[in-house]
Image (tube, helix red, strand yellow):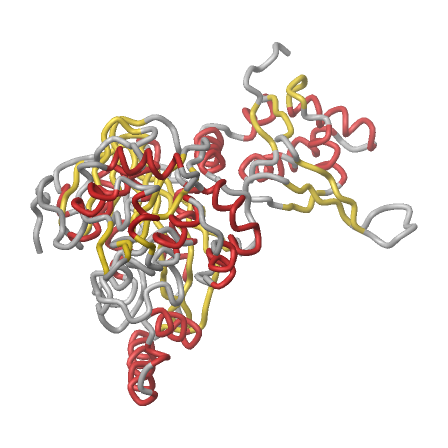
Length: 514
């Protein structure tokens, strides 16, 4: 396993070099080869179909001649384009010399997939990947070699969306692939390091950054944290090869360790690689083992000195899971006996480990001195829709944990709160009933949580505008409802704490004088 950085002048064999990337970028933008341009040319239906790797609607939409249609056919549909047509829209000689394009008979073909990608602030970026592998997930790399480099898929955009985007001095993209996480990090990190076990992935990361007009990253080859063994970072992001498989056939997805050991190792080692206040974001899979609480399994992964928020988004039984990744590798399209044998290998592996199901989700760590003695570890199952990007919601979650960690019940009652933006109240009950059966508070942003509250909780949340302390609000509610204010103060802090923890209430920015 190499731990040396690939030479800037010697990218992986067969890949283009970024010498004239600025010229190529100018040509792509001039032709309107952007996310917005594609939507306008193809229409919403064909654009959505292309994201599903269905090309027929896009082929129909690009029958007419034109610069943008030529680029779509060349890079997205992998169809040959006449030399004159290619030369009319691209710096052809330079693109051929650098290896972005290749000649085939009388036509020109793309050597790599170049896909427009809209940045969070409207930037026009381009993600470079292997031909035919722009969309990840099932079937994204069917039948491909083990060193294949995928483009942007749902996992990539999920990780980018949950990452906290505060300005930082240093960021690490571990397992960089096509470079999309490094590209995002380059917008708010002074220094970006990208690592991957696959040299081709490092070369693709360099191409993605160059073609997108982003600063270069420091590229290092190696597994897990080996290439950065003695260094620490303010931000770590990783979409690792998390698939729990009976082997390591495909570098981009199979970690080569037994069970969920790769994800556990990655999370546990991240604590020593984070600076104080730094965040680490991972996508991961984990085993549900017979006789073991999956939440306790994940709790044991959290390194000392870190707070954690772990969200399980989906669970699949072992047969569903095996079928998903057998399709991903294209095994379902080959010899039926070979498919059966490989399916048996997956089930044998799960049976040997006592695995009953596999969870999918994300893990966020934050390095905190306070976590050494009093860590905040939230592990939950949340399969419901969320509003991406979630980075600010993630940052706010940990800020709330810091606040609650320092507040006993007396301090909580003395503080002032405001209702979070876009929280609404819903009353649930039979039509025409005098009183609702129960009241829900619902968020329309971030995690989009809903929580049931009683009459006191609903009344309390409704008047939280930062003016009165929590205790004085409860005293007023007690008077209105004819309750003992002392008893109400005694039993309500836990409910307030939960509303703060889940983001329905926020501590007021300033506390007015009593």
